Image 1: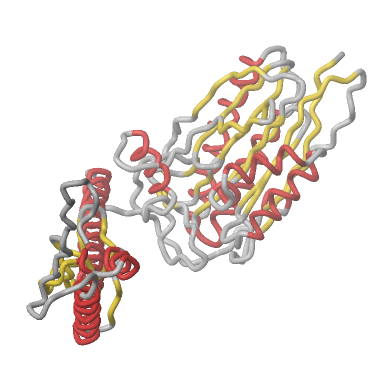
Image 2: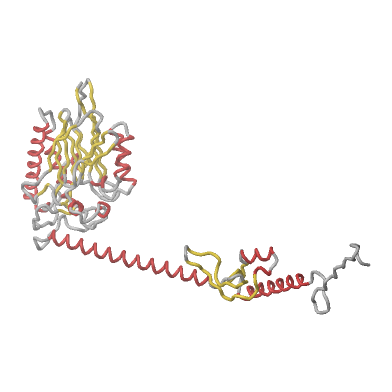
Length: 447
């Protein structure tokens, strides 16, 4: 049985941009995505020229190494085409494009990558990002200066370190050969998808969609549902075993699917900074097609700026934390002051006492203290009243608490009086003893 591929390519302008600067290609063995940059006219021209030159190598190869070499040669040739085009059309100076491509050869794929478009592989329901972005923030992540989460919102996340264009005659392209097997699903995309839709959501869509065309459409729709601030292009490739080799009609999408038109504009040549491009992401970006720093130490300046941002962020968090602590402390103090407006009657040292505060505590901290201790013993109270005092009696104010104490004092006094009234007494209040009879000599009681 032969190893075959089934693929689909979709490109959409997105919800914000006026033209599509992405290009995509799905052929017999070659699959690629390019994301152009360089202004209204330059981006679409760059990606279309690169993809059309690359499409010329679509075909069969004897080995993955041969396919890898063909990819490298085609990318160098595409870069030369861009340089020549800028020479003939100076208004396109500064245009460039990312490029991610793969060629399947049997059980292997040859990969080529430059820029921030991406190649993913879904195997055994697990999605893996194969390529590494050639961006400034990715360098910061790799060096440990920022986290991947911080990279998503970093103000320099649009800076590309490597692209095809009129800047570098010999661009550095990542090349590798990997294995593939039946059941693998490969996905190539521009950052209009990967920069908007989370990894887990992309994985779920690729797992749930049966046909490549359905998966590509669902991924583009997901980007649109998230606002699609940039062009989005997706190529999905499934690897199968089959007895038949299907006929494949190569498909170009995006700007490569249209005739290339050069729009005359008032342009000027800009300073050439090797390997440093700005990939606009905002809907109304007024930034230039690439940076024009006045110093070769621009990267160091960016890194130092990032450090300053980090320090400012830490100071902001510290101030916010101090404010939060102050608010919590103020709330606790206000709560404590309120507790001191409450009173209750309870027991202290065996006597009835008035307490200021509330009966509850916070851990080892008590929220009440003895306000006034009386000379009324709790054991002088009736049993039921004594238990009430031991369990505390709440009062709304100190006056109400003192009224409770007065009633308890009266109750204790009544209990004392009722206790002293039991048994006989003389005029002096001392019980009169009862005389004991004296026995007679004969042993009979005396009369």
